[in-house]
Length: 237
Ligand SMILES: N[C@@H](CCC(=O)N[C@@H](CS)C(=O)NCC(=O)O)C(=O)O
Image (spheres, rainbow, N blue to C red):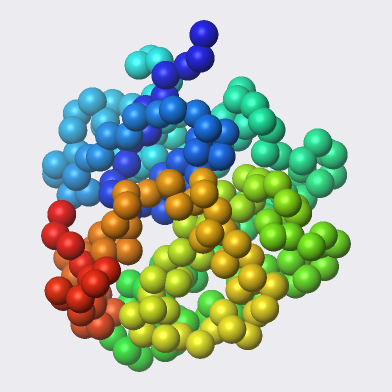
């Protein structure tokens, strides 16, 4: 019998989105429970299943609970067809090396978006070029025509990077950063990922507005560019 999956999330969490992309790509039905981000408001049932009090947690059949998005993605790939990892062990290890690198990539993007001043944003954005350059190199040398990391089939590497390329794009739309344009393979990969059905279905429908709202709530510098009331502008909630 198919397992019953429940993902526990905050509305805009990119790490939950990574697990949701894997579930969507495998066409696995799942429930999603949103909890409040405020540390004092996280429910006891969640604290009992999330050792470091972070999302995502994937609950399976109301019993077992897994945490850490990479462990969740790997578990889903081992247990639910179709396999998103490559069959070849070297290619698979290579994919895992790049999924490990996503935390460095994510840190560079997120710290830029959450800068508290223009100077901080400019200084942090300058550091995005390191991880962007590394991804550009591997994409340029990967020996396939894409559109995804391994070619035509979406993989766990794609699921890992898509949420952060999407956050970069949201920030870039608020205050153009002019960075990704210098990395054509990365830009093309970003475009393919943001158009992928599994990525589009992996978040709340108004993710960009929710993400903008998060900037406002956290009083980040980029929030000043959010045009309230404009199409696609931040919605409360
Ligand atoms: N390494 C973790 C990162 C998860 C993570 O940082 N989640 C954030 C939300 S996007 C969180 O739960 N933060 C709560 C906190 O730090 O208290 C994973 O891949 O699952």
